[in-house]
Image (cartoon, rainbow, N blue to C red; front, side, top):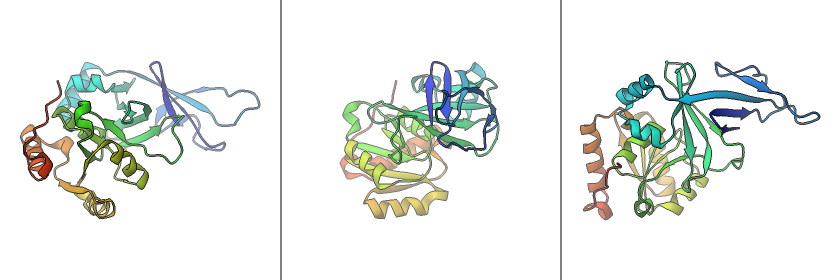
Length: 242
């Protein structure tokens, strides 16, 4: 489980016998002692820093996420600049943990770290909310945070599933905050998107290329097609985020 404390990303192994002490996915970590007689789990610290100009430029070039968007959502990086960390928030703005993405080609590219106070088994998905007036209208579910940021930049409330899992608990949360839900998964997850649509009676859209890889023209075309295909939204155009 992980949480933010100042500039540090801290994590604590939830098992007494982890076998992965001393390093956490290739990142050198400091280790803090546990209280005498306490649980044998160990606590780790990853020092994060603000994104450097080089990292901002690289992320903008790769994913078309604007610097102000990165600042708004609190993106940070490790000291070496080989990974970026994005805080994860729920629909009410409560922190849920972090998601890390390697920038140097290390695999697996992405991993999420739930907050230490997040209920076990509860939905863990990252909300990118637009104006509250839009929040109860349409929510588009995508796989990753950069795709969600791209949609937020054009005024669409989006939820990053941090993968492709859409469970009943997650869907229940979505339905509390949206009147229309669209599952927009990448081409390689299309069967799962269809399954979710049939199971939960949601709209589904195939995304190719990935939203985070789309040019501005492609994104405009895709969002226009999305709104024109939803009867309730035919004459409504979302306002881009400033």
